[in-house]
Image (cartoon, rainbow, N blue to C red; front, side, top):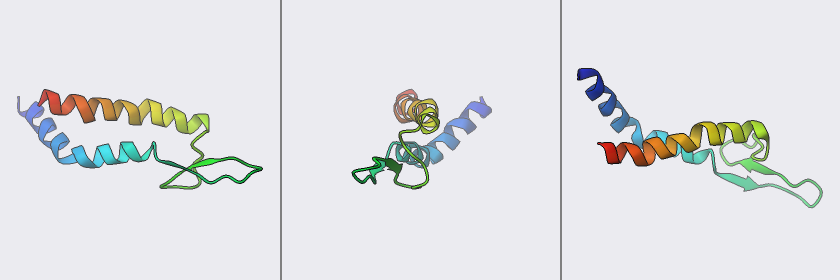
Length: 77
């Protein structure tokens, strides 16, 4: 019981930061010209939002965190 309570308290403290970090993974900006269209991550312009590698992180980590921590955690607590 103490372990579960500890996890709930830690997630409550980290709730805002984890949600913000997860949402930032979706925030892309269009930095294209007419010859080379490109969308880049707002936090790090070296990350191309259209690449498969980035989409793996977004849909494999950020989206589940938003669903689980953003919606399910407040309902469960």
